[in-house]
Image (cartoon, rainbow, N blue to C red; front, side, top):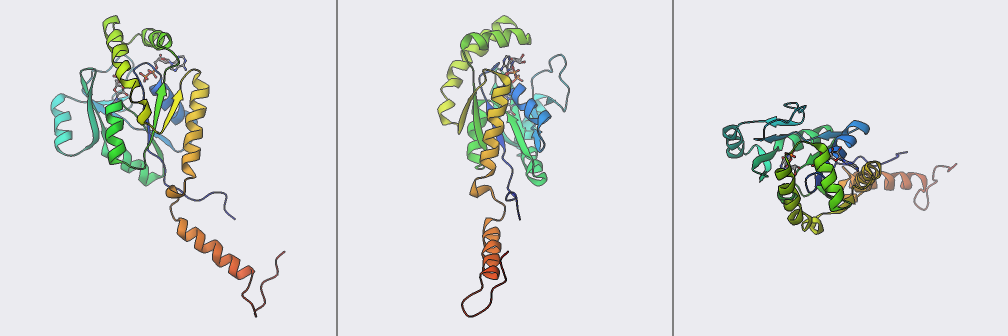
Length: 225
Ligand code: ADP
Ligand code: 5GP
């Protein structure tokens, strides 16, 4: 008896206007559930206070970032708010090999590239409950000066228009609810036929078992209990 078909894990793409809460949701998934791993991006941005190199980001020079692009090391990259950010291809490959859901916290330009390059990826747009909430979260986070907060809010206007191109939209009103919604999406996605590792093998196995139990005419089948 099986309780589920073995499946390929989902690369999970979370994108949203800055301050909506995608990083918080990504880390909650990784901290609370088994088989979720965070994709550590490379960036030319300087580390904020409390950020750890190799954990939050791989903080690299522009030269190093350029060599990563030239060497084909990045599955996607983009310039966001004046800095370069990119996802090492290896992050996706390693998660696939280990059977883990890799969570990408990236911008909408990166999400568009991933859609083309990683067809199995699940794209979730994290939607702010209101502009006031976004403003409140960005200012409370305290990581950007007021001018930068305003710049990110204005950039959010264009990013919101991309929501329609995603597979799912999750409003981050209440954090617990938003995390539960994303978890439910991954659960449902894991049950798509296309994600099963060996669906034809499983079908053949149960068909064989049916034949063994219900023997063809003229033979005696095994007794069914
Ligand atoms: P993003 O990665 O989208 O830029 P963050 O995850 O850094 O956003 O979240 C921005 C701020 O909002 C953080 O201080 C975070 O703790 C807070 N936050 C995230 N989700 C919620 C929520 N549902 N309700 C209230 N505050 C939230
Ligand atoms: P922050 O500087 O606030 O950490 O991130 C700024 C923006 O860059 C966020 O929208 C974040 O999701 C995005 N970002 C982080 N890593 C990547 C990445 O690897 N690729 C792309 N395209 N965007 C990223």
